[in-house]
Amino acid sequence: MTSVLLALSALVGASALTAPAAVAAPQTGRPAAVQTAVPAGWEVVRGGEVAALNGGADGKRSSAPQAAAQDLTEQGSEADELSLIAMQSVRNERFVATEKNYPAPNTGALRARSAEYGGSWEGFAFEWDETTETYALRSLANDLYVAVEKNFTGSSQNLLRARSTGVGGWERFVVYYNAELDRWALQSTLNGLFVAMENGYTGSLQYALRARSAEIGGSWEEFVLYDLGA
Image (cartoon, rainbow, N blue to C red; front, side, top):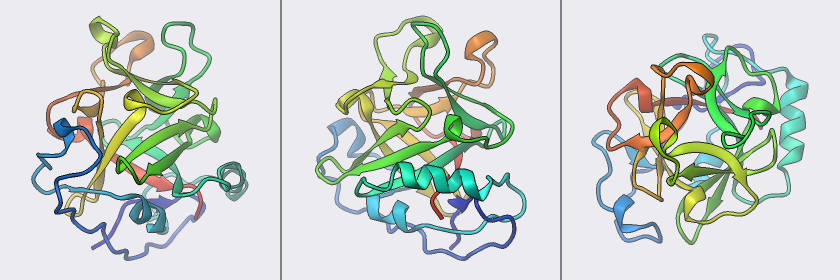
């Protein structure tokens, strides 16, 4: 199998990688809503597996300057079970950025709006927690954790925002990998829903990420992950 967790620091060449092992045991520290139903064709990814998947760019994706990737690696080097990642929406092929300059209440909103990887705005630290077997996402743009805004209403409900200084249920995600598609998906443990990119939105929240899908229905919920530390 191959993995699409790619190294942005490489310009050419692809590496064959071992895909994450399927997770059989349903009883974990995660909430019951996300313990039972793993989508067909997908498997739960554990911390050590993400950290180990360091590939080379396949020549079709954007590449980051070596210096930028090195800066981000040093920024997160002290954390255990940490992977520095850039996320690209499969739906619109844009990189996810943290809108740290947005005014309240959408300060720190995550949007797949960048045509290429440009630096910390598009960087995230995926921090693994062994107890809950989940990930927390820390934005490298503002050094805050990504939360699901369950109490927001209307089109902003379940918006992903980098706004938390600590990690609780609002900030935890299960990561999935599909070996056949070579793609990744995120599921919020707060509401049990998958993260989707709102390609049909207009205005300031166009391409916003929201934990609002009951299943992985297609490219709206699928992402390409790039390894910034390789």
